[in-house]
Image 1 (cartoon, rainbow, N blue to C red):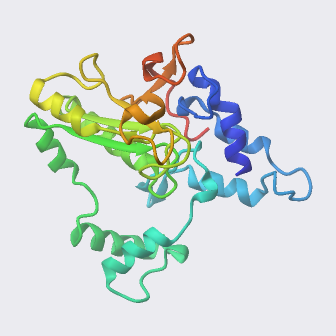
Image 2: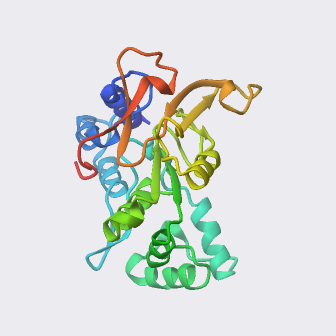
Length: 277
């Protein structure tokens, strides 16, 4: 939590507005921030030990096996203290292997067990999207939206980023029929402090049926934060709203408009990916 708080404090305003949300994630030098918190003496709980910093590096680096990437990193701007819970992976493995004592994700032996788990999840349960199949689908003019929270500590944000990057590099035309929306300050499918309510179905139907590009004036892509549990679920009950920008763009405050309104932000390209910084 100390690292998360320090990261938000240092990187919050990189999108032009101090609002508790890190919008310009790639511009945030989170490893330098982590190293600045390195304990100089006893662990007080507000500093990072050698072990803590090593965990940060592991969580924010690709998982490698035999010199190839087999797992995506988490974003350094997420609350990395929340990474490592066994509930979701244990459930997947129990489902896959139909065992009361499946492979334990907390003692997972990557070299020995990765291929076994991958074969089971991909071959039997189709847990991983097939790039070739998606490219074929998009190549026929079909559309694809992906949505992921930057602060997700259950499924690494770079799972979606790596996939959309592969789509766009493999076939630029297919890439034009797909969008990835990375939501600042949003955890797994929602939660945390960001704008986590949205209506992508209406955006998609407008794109498909009326041929109006997502993010244009006639087809805005907006997320909002509900003001409270009793407020209307649509945007009329919003505490604040933000544009959802197609990756790798991020929402930049225009410097003068109402900071609670999506119209006061523009989608901008940030610096290159700095996950290794």
